[in-house]
Image 1 (cartoon, rainbow, N blue to C red):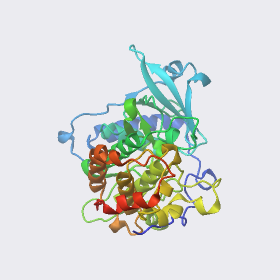
Image 2 (cartoon, helix red, strand yellow):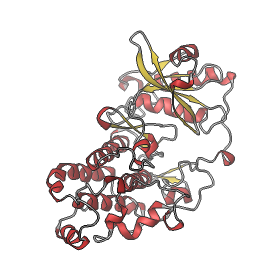
Image 3 (tube, rainbow, N blue to C red):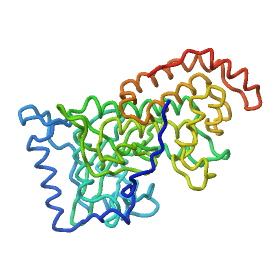
Length: 389
């Protein structure tokens, strides 16, 4: 299995100092609204994300155009008690809208943050055009004056990041079965973008903080500000300004700006590795040898005797050996240096779905604790038949 450390070409990634600040001005607010309406109603994009002629369109804009005052009221004037998240893009508040008091999440973009009009428009249009159970639902947007806000369905369990990183033993960790189901659901969302949307959509921002969790930990991909239509016809890639998040970006994209769906596969491999290990992709607080997760995991992920050293200690040994080793094998394939060697997302979905279906049988061989003889468990893994994606 080939692994690659993605460290070069990162002068761009989520770095305010090296990216131009977005411009939100009153003079552009009308342009934003008009541009959204023109693109949707003009027939340039169909509901499936394709370039359909007007007669083939199924519907027009579905996201509601909110006025700023409505969202002020929904969040009680953006009261701190309603704040549920914050990042480089701005803040996210919980609020209630409409006559039925619908609970929603409202993202207020920071005027000095990292998401400008380009990303705002991309997210509004993309989420209006793609619909899938594993993609977050955009309810509406606001572009009054210099304000830019997005209104989403409320995801009560927050992000995957909240549940797997830095939780320690004082908090309940996600068990293995929940983790692998979340991974499979996220992969299904990516499969829709790559294979069902026409032209295909490259997500470009796969990471744990962008996987939101609903009831029963149902995952949905969110934050489509960086999403871009993929290559069509004889084109093998899309050339674009390199954007993404450090630690998740595919090396060939970081170095050349050539974007393909295989770039998303690499990012998914990083996320799958994080789900298994409970470790962030990049963490400068860890010992030097472990700061880059992909690099540190390389000698262990395909080693049948040592792979358990990668598994999140918060699981306390309660996981099926065969399934975990196979999941690490899938992550390793996704992280291949050569894009052509990475599996297509439909194969990843098939493999993860198989792991879920076989988990009941595999759980009969759960590792009860870390003190048991490693040789017996190694023999068990070696005797199993493995998935080749």
